[in-house]
Amino acid sequence: MNGGGDAQNGPAKQLTAESLPVFNEGVYLILSRWSALQLAIEEEWAGRRSRQLADQLASDIFSWFTQAKAEPLYIDDLENVLDEGMLSLNCEIDDGSVEEVAEKLMIMHEECLEGDYSSVEKLRRAGPAAGTQQHIRQAGNDDNDDSSEDGSDDEGDMMPGSRSNMAVDSPVPQPRASSENRPNESQMEDDGWTTDSTRVSFWVPESILNSSTTEMVVEDESNEMQKVFHMKGGLGEESYALNSKSQSAYLSRAMQVLDQAVLDLCTAGFPANSFNIADLGCSSGPNSLVAAAQITGIIHQKSSQLGRTPPEFSVFLNDLPGNDFNTVFNSLPSFQEKLKTEHGQDFGPCYVSGVPGSFYGRLFPSNSLHFVHSGQCLHWLSQVPPELRDKQDPLINKGKVFISRTSSPAVIDAYKSQFQKDFCAFLQARSEEVVAGGRMVLQFRGRRLEDPAPDESCLLWDYLGLAFQELVSEGLIPEGKLDTYNTPYYEAYTEDVRDEIEREGSFAVDRLETIVIPWDGCNGGGTQYDRATTARNMGKAIRAVNEAMIRSHFGGGDVEFVDRLFQKFGRIMVDDSKEVEHVSIVVSVIKKQSTV
Image (cartoon, rainbow, N blue to C red; front, side, top):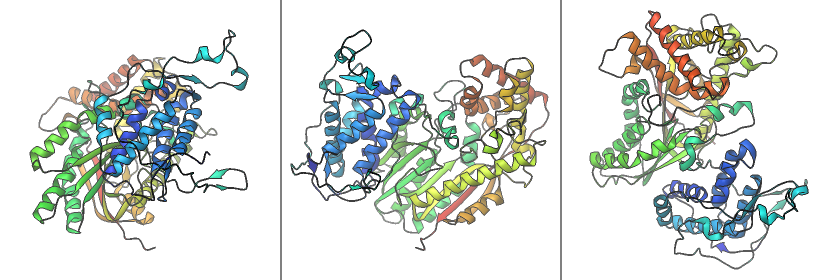
């Protein structure tokens, strides 16, 4: 690593809880305007992993700026991070844009340290750079570096452009810098690798501008779900935004538990000057910001009643990378305006940012969150239970898409075991991120009964399995495809949830309750519909959640196939006379004081 170059003077200040999400946003806004990077992603120069590698570059940049040790930051080190990231995407750049991007990142970081967000504001207003290209080429094998197939030299393969094509508004200030050489503090390990112990990991959101089309490719089965699972985006007739009335009903019924947890937190002395909230599994549509609005509103009112200055809020909205973050962020202006209308113009500030990634792993720095909410998410598993993909017995759940009355004990045990592993992983990750005394309110589908396959948990999945079987009998899908399709979903028994929380040990259960909504909750409240209309609405709701996984497994190109599947689902539901209630678990927990 080059040891010279300019440095930001230090040891210096660290980014505050307020400035972290703003700087975080600025990083991906700058990267979203770097034409070389965007071209490498769009053209998949590193194959299907291109998007994942670009996300990793953003993560590396953020980690580099938020080093555990307060020491000078050298711009040539940052340029090396950028160069290495682009090379991982098979992209070589010699037009000076690496240096330009590094300079803009350094300036923006310097400003954020001082609470100045002018560079980020400029980038927000500017939007994406259009039609810009840089002097770049796709890195090839050594044998092909000297010439192209037609005998021309490399220069002919490079795209025209110049350093000015970066198209990012240049802030006026310059970073404080030193011309001194960077001390060489890296250590050489026995195997010859150089290590740096100062970096901390933080999941950085990908560009909001591209989030709705993101495909995250992963290399192990435990994270395969991240590649294909997301609610159906947009605002169309079959979108999740227009077909999440039952989720809204659950959220409304759980509001009393949420309110009490927030009030208890205020009584316990929280918050101070800033308050950090995470909503895990935010999805998109009208429900995405409901909890955030409720939590911030209560804290603002309670602080005023207690004679305290209301805090500044940071709200982190998390979901898997394929989530339609565009729709969420397009609703932010009206969200902010509503808060000020309801609570006065002195409300806030409230900073909102997106955090793509799986909540079954770490998402935030240690001891950084005061309140975590998750609504209607934790029944989704990180993966299909491995036992159901066993090559020795691939048909263990033949003809079904979930647990049913006729499922073998092995299938039921596999699902329960996967839930236990995932829920424990979730709690362990949050135990690192939530401050002592902090709160979590978690709401997810569950069971009132110890019976692992009650109709209230399995009936709709039985309907979907029957619809698939009809498509098999009509020759529209291979039987083997159905036999290997299983839904990564599980409704836990209430006492099993309590047991897992107590077993993990980091949180104390404050309240654990069940919420019940009627079988036609997908229609919304107040209006009675006939069974056919309810079946159609239920089909849309299930389709909005499952379509991405279904199309990935059975083939993504045929929309008519999915249409026919849910037409059959609706008819099967109409023909059946059963009406079952839907159950959700809501649990409020408190982070225990550390005993270390």
